[in-house]
Image (cartoon, rainbow, N blue to C red):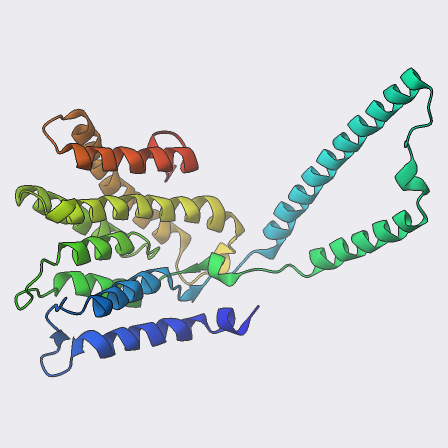
Length: 304
């Protein structure tokens, strides 16, 4: 494990402090009013939000036995494939020898004096790699309430009163990044906020280039992806007895979040069938849906 991975929480603290130093006003106790006059500053802030959304804080207790079993299954599967390929090659060489009567290359590798040494070396490396399981802890970490609270605060306290430009693109990026958080205690609130912002954008006859609506849709699919990743990839390898967050509480929050996300899903399906909605927005929903269907299953049901 590298130093960067070991001290990943320090990266998170640095990003939060750096973002606050750029945007927080200590005198009023709120974040400063938006100012998009400097385009470079705007892109730096949005990139910081993206980096914060990907930062993880809580390290999960990994069940190394399950990872070892999973890894061994993968190794056995590769061995079976190699054996099948070698068998096909040997049969092909034997058929060629029988037809032509010429000496083939069957057994050539086995007669090579270096073959046994290479095979022994490969077995030693495989055994060593099996004994020392290398785990990237970023794949077994979660976001806690610090980053979630910060990003929700940015959305609620967003002040665009002194800005000459519309802030719809910033709100869309915040909504999209909120969906990347896997803080399950805050997920129901985030899902409700996505639905609220999407409905509000519709009532207001849509933002420029449908930025808020698209950000809410991105956040929706990002949240589905986080639930899918936790239930399918993380949870089977987590030692639940050593976790600070009880498994039942996490499952309860996921269930509550899924109920809200299913309501959003039904809304998106109605939009797809309603020709009165803008074609660009319906095409965007269709693109996101198809992409997630291909990657995570039928009908975009990523949480199942």
